[in-house]
Image (cartoon, rainbow, N blue to C red):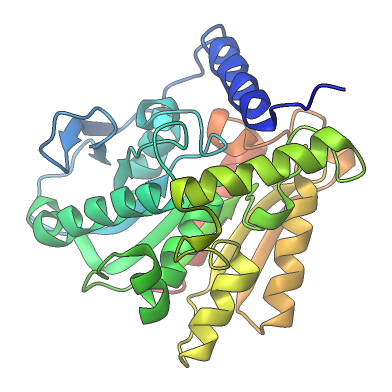
Length: 316
């Protein structure tokens, strides 16, 4: 029997998702915001190394606004900063300065490459953000799906010298006040994206993800064993640091809800401060994976996202 190439299966899956996404209808645009688009944070002419900055429409720059850093999802293999524009615009319209960065995907790098890009954008914000109206004393880092993993991982790396060395990045001077994760996938050793762990394709593609994350160095990669949130939070705690409060948005009707449940277990096991807004099955089948990002205008999305913002405000 011919051995299946699970890495190719993953790439093909996400290419299909990307193609299908082009045929989606444009959602309603928020009002009351403006933006600076495709600002480079690394001057190398790579389209992945750009960010979008969002502000309330009437923002004059005379005051500093609380900061939201958004890391887009897409299975680490798909999506772009512009895909979640309406979501970030909505957050800005609520009175926040918002930065969303692009990053290289797994088809062209490994997990260290992604983390390196995220930290390059954070260092750009550290250097220029306060001059552009970002209050770096009040910072929320948020992400959806794979971006939820990256938001939690970034917060861990910020607090652990061991992780900084493993990923070869330097921390920024500002602190993260709050982390938020929407329909997150932070347990990277259990990435049963296509099928569950009882099938060959489920187990095979989960292992393929692990190979993508480790890249050419494979098991010798310094970040091996320091990728999944249940591992990286142990690195933080081992150094005696207190993890910031976490707000989790989930839905029982979303395809990867088992990851949200696993994340809650890890939160409990480690005594972390967190809050969950999880929609139930009876609330509607439309509350699918990352619904609050794709359709910011739905009642459930508005309630979810505004509750997240209130949680952030309570932790300034």
